[in-house]
Image 1 (cartoon, rainbow, N blue to C red):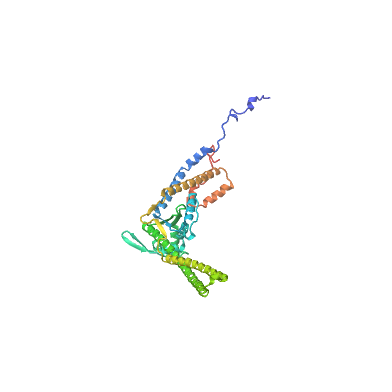
Image 2: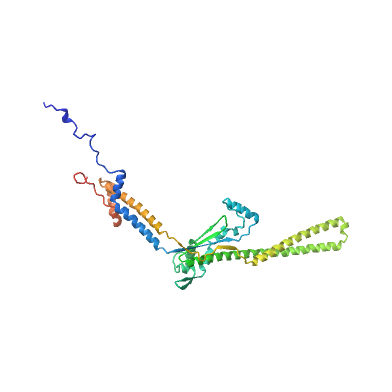
Length: 376
C-alpha cells in the first residue's frame, strides 16, 4: 500500500493568501482617466465646436444701440407731504404724497401703454443713412411690412417696441428713466424723443381736460351761488326798508340776525366758488411743462454688447457636459458587451435604428478579449 505523504495533498506553491488579486475593472480616478483618454477627441472637439457655433451665431445677430433718457414729473406736493416723503425715502420706503396720476410710477406705466406705443409706431421718423434720408413709421423701419401671422404689422411693431423699451423709477428722487434699444442709433434717439413728447402731450391734454371739467362745474356752481346771494341781498334790502325801527323789536332783531348770517354764508360760498372758477380757467389755458427732462436722448446712443465671449463659454460648457454624458454611455456600452443581456440586445436594435451621426457617437459593443485572445 502506497503511503501518501501530507505534502502530496498540500496547496500549490502559490497559496490563496499570497496569490495576486484577480484582474478587474479600474475604479475611481483611474477609471475616469481611462474613460477620458478613450474619448479624448470627443471631449475636446464637441465643446470647441459648440462654443464656436454659439459665438458665431451671436456675431451674426444685428448690432443693437441703446439710448437712455430721464425726466421728473412736476407734481404738486404740499410741504408736509414733501417732508414725509423725504423721511420715508431715507428709510428706504415709498410714501405717496401726490395724486396717483402725478406719481413717477404712473409715468413709467404710461410709457408702456398700448395707446402711447401705437402713436409712437404711427409717427413718421426721418433718419439719415449713408448720406440719404430715410422716412417711415416703425412698421417700415422694423421691416414688418407684409408680415403674416395672427397679428397685424402694426401690432407686431407695438410688441417689438414694447420689448425694446424699459423703464425704471428711482424711489428716493422720483426720477423716471427710459431706455430704448434699436438697430440704429438715430432710430433709438428718435423713438426716445417721441415717447417723451407723447408723455408731455398726454399730460397736457389730461390736465386741460380735468381743468375744463372743473371750470364747467365751478361755473355752474358760481352762477347758482351768485343768484342765491342776490336773493338773500334782496331779502335784506326789503327787510331793512320795511322795518326801519327793527332794533327796538326783539322779534325783528332776531329776524335781522338770521338774514344777516345767511347773507354772510352766501358771500363766503360765492367768494370760494369765484376763486375756484378763476383757477380752473387759468389751468385750462396753462401750457407750462408738466415734466422736467433731466437727460435728453440726443447724442446718448451707445452700443449694446452682444456677449459673444459669454455665449461661446456657455456653448463650450454645454458641449463639455454633453461630451461627458456621451463618453459615459460609450463606456457603459463597452462594459455591457461582456455578457449577452436583454438590455444589450435591445441597445443594439435601437442603435441600428439611430441616425448615422448618433450611431458614430455610440460605438457597437464588442466583447472583451480573454487571456487566450478570444472573446471572454
